[in-house]
Structures are given as structure tokens and as C-alpha cells.
Amino acid sequence: MMAYRASFAIEMFVEIGYMIAQIIFFNILYGNLSSISGWTRYEMLFLIGIDMFVGELIIGMIFANNTNTLPEKIRNGDVDFTLLKPVGSLFFLTLSSTYLPSLFTSLIGIYFICIAISHLTIVWSLLNILGFIIIFLCGFIISYSVMVIIASLSFIFINAKPLPRLGMNTMIQFTDKPFQMFDGVFLKIIFFFIFPSVFITSIPVHTIIKGLNYIFLFQAIFLAGIFLFLVNWIWSKMIARYSSASS
Amino acid sequence: MKKYFKMFTNRLSAGLAYRSTIFGTMFLDLVTMSGVVIFWTAVFKEHHSISHYSFSESMLYFLLIPFIASFTYVFVSEEIGGEIRQGSLSNYLVKPFKLELDAFCRSLASKINYIFISFPIYMGILYLLSFKYQYNFISFKGLLLGCFAIVMGFLLHFVMDLAIAWIAFWIGDTWAFVHFKRVIFLILGGASYPLEFVTGIQRTLIELLPFKYMYYIPASYLLGKRGLNTLFIDVCGFIIWFIIFIILGKLLWNAGLKKYEAYGN
Image 1 (cartoon, each protein chain N blue to C red):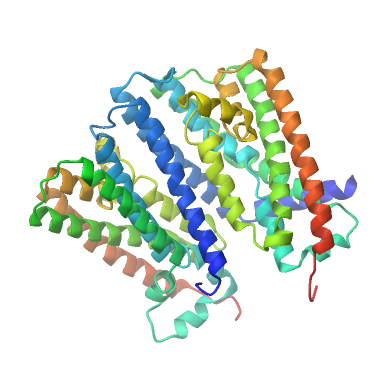
Image 2 (cartoon, one colour):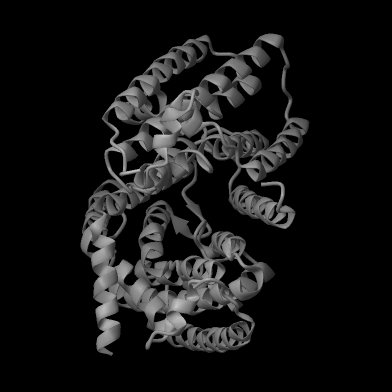
């Protein structure tokens, strides 16, 4: 990918363009409002910075060159060659190729995080930082698992190109929203248990700003374990039912 | 005309062949709608209005955006740009039809697929949500004017996208321009927020540009925020931009064709 430097630079500019659109929307919104779900301007900017960082990581490491290409690989039989390799098919088809422009542009999120932190009064503690890292990593594992589970439905619905994007959107569409927005039993079940995207950004940020919540910590670890088991189990079932495309 | 009608029906059949693609796209729209509903419900818990948009008006505006996008958004630059890059444009040059009309048939066929499958479900959801969020469902006059505005948005986007497609003669891949176009629609087209949220000189500049026709203008007519009193000005603006992009497209096509080379096709 780095061989075509112009193409690489253009792809990075495109990613930056989407981030600019997000920041413009944020500025227009907070030009009219003082807070959203109790989150002030710079708390929200912190959330958006983390969202940019992790969103680009997810796109670069999981989606762009991996799950997004799965329907095409199944349709034209490229999965056959993957199954012959001495590497796990789950890793090879979902994590082996990275989209570098996203990884570089994820660093822009760090810029906005620094701006936000400089305007917030945060009580830093080792416990909060450790809690943030653990919950964040669990959220990333959950996100990977959900995206792969949905993308793996491509083994059943041939040429269902929207499936990988549906998996990605399900997880990162809501990561720039504070978890307090998911009010009511129904929304809490969806966003805290079934598609628990709150553990990717919102709850880690809340941990840093307001302090560690042990219920969230243990829930994140528990859900990460459950989803990791599920993704391995479902993937093995899908591979078992896979039939080649006449290669 | 017979050949173009046949091309249109072929594209229609091809679009319906993979029903999982259609339903997958519909679920994507539902996820987007859910995000909109959740976000603006939370915002308006603490605020009564934003720039003269009440909760119900904001809710309906953002629920209408994916619906409008399904009609006004086209993928001409991605498809034709790819054909130019791969050299398969040569196949079209020797055939007895115009590539622009073929592209138009493709785009129209995909819209018709959407009308028959996703549209009824989408309108049903909008109607049911009107009871919960108490927005006035679209009036008949708003629907007529909104449909007219959507047609304007589709046609303008088509000629704009065609001009972008011809850029592939020089840069090989229009991918970046396609995404820049999406970013511009987010910021200047009304896809992220009603343009009333922007004030001052920025608003005046945005009103002069063509991007508002893709989302903001159709949504405003459907909501009843614009009416017969603004229709004449909007149509005049549409005609001016339509002619500009037609001329630009023709110039780029003629210049690009002289430069075009393909190997092995």
C-alpha cells in the first residue's frame, strides 16, 4: 500500500475529510446547546476524539481489507486457499491485512483528546487509567466479535455485500454518543448487552472523567469473554458449512 | 428508445437478483435511523428547540434524510470511473448507445428497486414513529413538492457525478473525489443538520451552492418549511446548476476521450 504514495496520501485526506465533517457538526451543535445528556462541550470532545481514534482503528484493522472483502472472497472461492494455509482462517480472513491510512489518521483523534483534556479538570489515578485500558480493550474485542459474527453470515447469504458494513455500523455508529442516551430497558439491553458499543468509547471516557465503575469493569470483561467464545464457535460452524465455488 | 428501455429492465432484474443485498441495505438504513432517533431524543430532553426546529420537526427531518438519500444519491462516478480505469470503457464506445444514457438507466433502475422493496417499509416506520414522536406526518402538498424536489436532487446529482466520473480519464481512480463529495454533502448539503443551524455569511454561501438540492431542499419541502413561494427560485437555481454541470461534463468527456487509451480490450 505504501508503494503508491500519492494514493496513500489521498486516502488519508479522505479520512481526514470525514473527521472534519464530524468536528464541524460538533461545533454547530454546541454553538446552539450547552450540554448533551449531561456531557459538556469538552467532555463530548474527549468522547469524539476517542471515537475517531478507535473508529479508525476498527476500520483499519478489522473492516477495510478484512471483513469488507469477505463476501467477495467467498463468492469467487478465495477462501479455499485460506483454508489450506497453516494459519487459523479466522485470523487470516479477519485480521491479517491492515488499511494503513486509517491507522495513521486515528492519530488525529489523539489531537482532539489532548485539546479536550487541557480544558477539563481530571483527577488522574492509576486505577482509573487501568480501568480505562481494560474496558477499552474489552470493548475492542467485543466490537471485533460482533463485526465478524455479522460478516460471517456471508457464508449463508452469498454476495450479501452490505453485511460487513452492517456489522461495522452496528458497532461504531453509536460510539460518539454518551451511554446516558441509551435510556429505558430496551435500549439498555441492546447497547449494554447485545451490541455493547458503550464499552468501546463512552464508558472508558466516563471512567477517566468521573472515575471507575466496578460494575462496568466486570461487565466489560464478562462480555468480552462471551463474545470471544461466540465468534470462535460461530466461525467454526460457518467454515464447516462452507462449500467451494468450484476452484 | 427501445434499447434504453431494455437496458433499464435488465438493470432492474439484476438489482433484484440478490435480495439479501437489498435487505442488507435496508437494515443499514434502519441502523442509521435508530442512531438519529436516539441522539435527537436525548438532545431535546434538555432543549425545547434549536434554531426554530422543534423536537418533532428535527426528528422528522433526520428520519427523512436516509429516505431522501436513497433517491437522490447515485453511484455513477464509482461505476464509470472504474470502467475507465480498467479500460472496459472501450466496450461501450463501440456499442450503439450513449454511455450517459446507459448510466442514467442504471441509476433509475436502482431507484425503482428501492421504491418497490424498501420504500413501503420505510414509510411504514415513519408513520408509526409519528405517533410516538408526535410530528405531523407529511401533508399531501408537502409530499408532491418534496417528490418534485427529490427529482431535482436526483437529476442534479446525476450530472454532477457524471462530471466527476470523467475525471477518471486523468487521475485513474475517482475514489477520493467520491468520498470528498460525500464529505461536502455532510457539511454543505444538509445531510448532518438542517442548514438553518448555520447562520450569517456561511449560510448565504451555502445557499448559493448546488449541494443543498441533495438533502436539505427535498427535506424542507417534505416538512412544509418551503412551499410554492420558494419553488420558482429553487427551480431557477436547479436549472442554472444543471446546465453548468452538463457543460462541464461535455467538456471533460470530449477532452478525456482524446486522451483515453486502453490495452487488451
